[in-house]
Each structure stands twice: as C-alpha cells, then as structure tokens.
Length: 313
Image 1 (cartoon, rainbow, N blue to C red):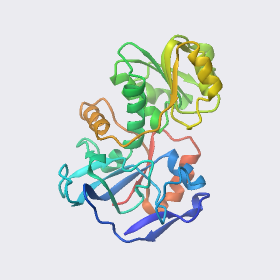
Image 2: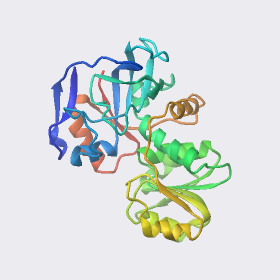
Image 3: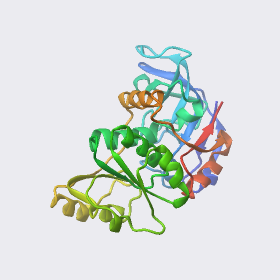
C-alpha cells in the first residue's frame, strides 16, 4: 500500500511516499481503507521533533481517518465490511493515517456522519474530540456561561465555537479580522482581533477559556476569568505552568492541560450534532497523499481557516 513516512525528523522534505505491506486486523481490530486523512498541528510537530516518540518502524504520520471497513478481526462486532467510519485511532501512539489502510481497535471508530463527505469527516475527529473533551467534559460548559475560545478560526477553534454554542454558551473568540464574519456565521457572539486589540483589556467575568495558543495566553486569560472559572490548555503538556496554576488556584480557577483521547462516545456526540445541523468542519485546503509535505508547509504558516485534509482515495 502507499503510505507517507517520516524519513528522519525535520522539515516537510522528510516526508516520503513509500510502498509498505498492507496490515491485517488482529483481535477486536478493523482494517479501514482510508479515503481521507486530516492534517493537524500535532502532525507537523511530530514530523519536526519526533513528537511523543511512540512510533513504529517506519514512522507513518497522521491520526484523523475517514474511510470504509475492508476487514474485521476476531471479536470486533461493532462494524461490518463496507461500513463507512471515522475516528482518531491509537492517539498518541502511531495510527499511520497517511496511508491507504489503517488497522486499529474497532471501538476507536464510529459511523461516519451521513451528512459529511469523507474529506469533511476526516477533518473532524482530532479537532472535534479535542474541543468536545475540553468543553463538555473537562470544563462542563453550561447554558448561559461565557466561553472564550482563543484562535477561534483555527482547526480546533472553529469547532469549539460551534460546540460551545450548541452547549448553550455565549461564545467569544480571538481571531484575525478577516475571519470574523465567518465565525459569526458559526455562532460566535463577540470577536476580538488579536492583531489590534488586547482581549485581556476588553473582557471580564468569563466562565471558561479554551487556550489553543499557549505562550503568555494562559497568564493573560486569568485576567478575564471570574473567580471559580476554568482555564483549559491544549497546546503544550507544560502549560499553563506552575506560576499561572498557583495564581489561578488562589482564585479558585481550575487549570490543566488536556490531551485528546480516542473516544467512540465523543465521536457519536459529534455525529449527532452534525446530523442536527449544529456542527460542520470547514475545509481550508485539500492535497493528494503524495503532497503531504506541501500540506504541512501550508499548515505551519498558521493562516488557514479550518482544516487541511489529504485525499487518499
């Protein structure tokens, strides 16, 4: 099968297409013919640094998958051959989504939402589960709360805006001015241009902040949170840092780093919102599998609105 491997860790040029043996499912696993694979910041972080170091040989990048079941291993009873599925298999271990076939535990997939194409469905698992787990499960967003989403126009951010709105929140986002009209269509109630305005000077009494940016955003976000609020960091395992965590704790603000996990329940919740017309991933660009390096180059510029996707079939 065709697959894109990392021939060492470094720039986009280390990504090479190779012919690898086609994997077969073991007990409780399924094989999925990949139609599309999402591209995420963790992909180019992994390519450049080795990421979490949890790689097979050879390292095949990618986790977001949408495709069709081609084989079912012993004991895997949820899916049948021919089913359309999507998922975030094995994260943060190697899933190998940049390939024609992925094999993974069957319960790390869910039926692909019928309202989405494979390209759209491949854009949803990592960003969608990150936003869902951060907002619905960690922060436990309630109707009427005020939620601030940093980098609201990004892959996770634009999904988080829609999910926070679906959870009944008032949604505030930081994003470039060029994305404001689009984000209002997605449900944002208030938008702040991060290039010209300081969100910390404009906001107060926010209940939940989703920090997708890192750096000094966590410390600055404390200024806008109410006592007893929640700050969820998803950018770096070292965030929000001991100093910020201590200042937050003094005000009863919950903080912590959340790393997305494979989650069939979350995938089903995302699909339910898609089918209800309350959630849809935006596609910034598509590339062929062999153009994975170009996809990474675009993503690393940090200017896209929505998600980048590789088309495999």
